[in-house]
Length: 553
Image 1 (cartoon, rainbow, N blue to C red):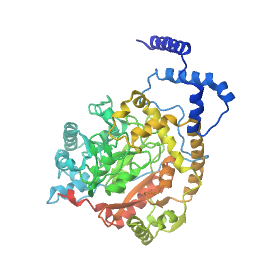
Image 2 (cartoon, helix red, strand yellow):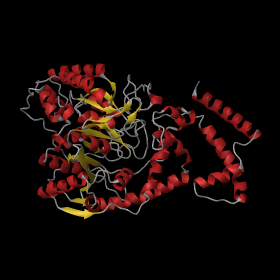
Image 3 (cartoon, one colour):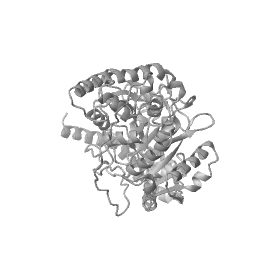
Image 4 (cartoon, rainbow, N blue to C red):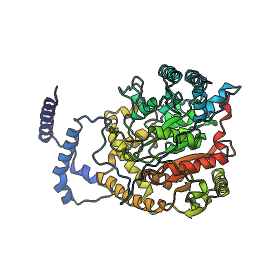
């Protein structure tokens, strides 16, 4: 059926549908309207309800007709989110040195230690032919088979694809065609990212057998760099939490604790040495949460930096993709490979990535003093020690507060309304009832209630968001980096709404031997500054070199 025939068929179907509805009993009564007002805090008079009744019936018919038209999962709304404040100046491209691959890296006596090597160390071994990509890939695959039964971090092991890519990398390197620092390095991706020929389950029972017939842009970019995809890692169901249709992903530092979500598999597998690095996604804490819980480093880039083509949407105006890795340097290496304009994702742009040439003491740095000082837990004590490390590096710390006078609790309706639109058919079909979690705070429940968020309130929340964007950018522009607790909810919600980049950095253990962290926030498109300060911190400490004892074997 061609497009014209299809449109005529749809028009006739809708016309018949509308005629049938108008000829029979209306879908709701005036009493229904009066009762429904309580959900949104209104109280129209009976006369006003009489006046609007026919209009609302027409609206309902319009909604029903709209649902007859299919919309691709890759289609963004015509209303595109713009994170830039008024008068924003985009950074210009600067020359950056290439990543250095160290010489003199040797294989340890216990080959299992290689699983926790950094990307530059692994690259040195591969480039200098001390280990092949195939051997390294088999090592990681073996670790997945031995350890993932305890962690539940892997949804699909892509071993046949991985071995084919690794053997190709070895042939290319042997022929003198070395592509760069990621060539031959095994990694995993959160299972929101499509890979042709493999399931893309989104961590949810209704999509357990879903196979998307194309590959996401980020995976294509890493393949072009010669990286080796060995696993599709757990996403909490539809990017919520650490519970998926196969169970609960565990923190390798404490198997009684979940890995946090929703990039649970990416955080857990990287921490336990099942992959060299991973890709995760964040809408509201899904990179920084698992990075903090599992003791690894995670970069959430500026909104629009990395293409989301071929990746499940939760919120078109808030979703970001970024690396979870051993260190800030590893995150920087992966980020440079995946960022950039993609014509298939209208939110992306050509803004360059510039690594910072400043030393730690040259960066303008502030910290959220009130939020840090009030935390008397192990997390807060470790953060105070972190501030001392920065001071010893010569960093001058100004005290600031994150903007407080905004309706942060209600901002979540932006995420929930957009998620409700993407998963409209899942809810209306009833398939949402097959999801594993059905309690109050589950994704299933969140999607159902999203149908009761008024469009007016969604737009009002976005108007407040615009005001927040202007204020946060005015505050942050005075500094290169802001230091924050990772779990500060106003900061976490606020910077996800404004699109600012952050890096989550491990900074010790609590009394139970579980990792703690802090967060560095940067200006729009200035991932370079936060990564520079994170690298300086990691050069002065050894927390990124700590690994979960149960999996160092």
